[in-house]
Image (cartoon, rainbow, N blue to C red; front, side, top):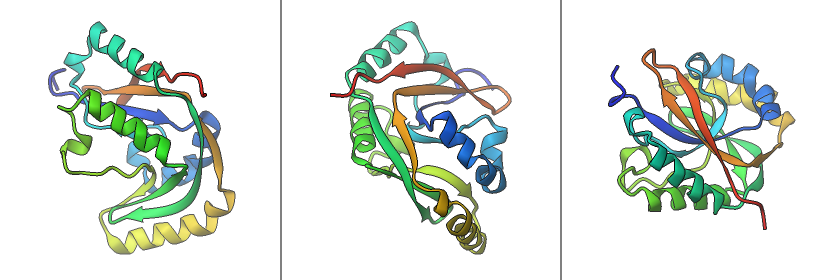
Length: 182
């Protein structure tokens, strides 16, 4: 795959202790993401620029943008679902909504999930399936096994840009620190 077709994503990674807590369930219910190098995270913007467009100028722009956004604490608190996945809800979600809005305002040519009308819901995916009966089973397991371990306390200190490789695996390209909390 050429670098013009390789994608990037802007993510807030769940801190290492949170990723460790989630690893067993993500391995069971979202193993393909782990196999492709995608850590537990909350998406800020996907898809973003192609790998070929990752220039020093763009990286400086991202560094400046995120330095103006205060870091913030959050917790992953409840198991929720979309029609195709199980996810954890961050509380508060408003700082993520502002982070997404700030990023989209700076880069209007890259709407969330390629849809200008889409209103992203901040979430950390734990399981994914296209089959409703399997999603019901996943949700039941997560409610029994993971929910008692919640909340998972986290801090958003940086936005990372991940890039897709020729093999379809993702690697962190850079991390852009958020500013100091007020």
